[in-house]
Image (cartoon, rainbow, N blue to C red; front, side):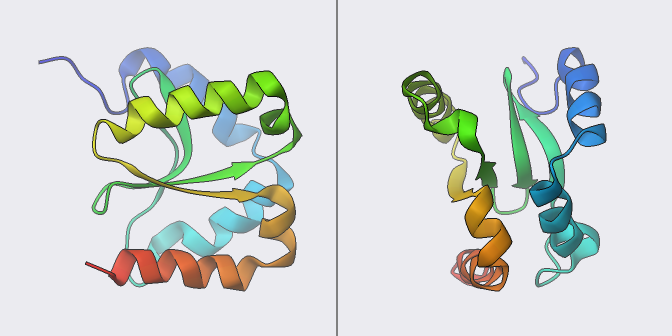
Length: 120
């Protein structure tokens, strides 16, 4: 069986991303880590296949992405579409937010995530 989640080959890339998180990711992570959101465990910079997710709740197979400027170019939009589609085929659900929204609407975003986590 091929390993799909947190492949060893992606370990260094995940480590670099964790050590170089954006300001928005740092603030967001401070609200997710240590099971602060309804007791659910989140991981940061978690790999699924060749892709790395910003934040991931394995129990609910929920990916949370914070998108900065590079995501809004033609190439970025197409890459994200393909990437998300491939990951969703593995049963992972996505919630996407912009960095700007994470800065100005943090509590609303956390409420939306909480609602998705508790829905089932």
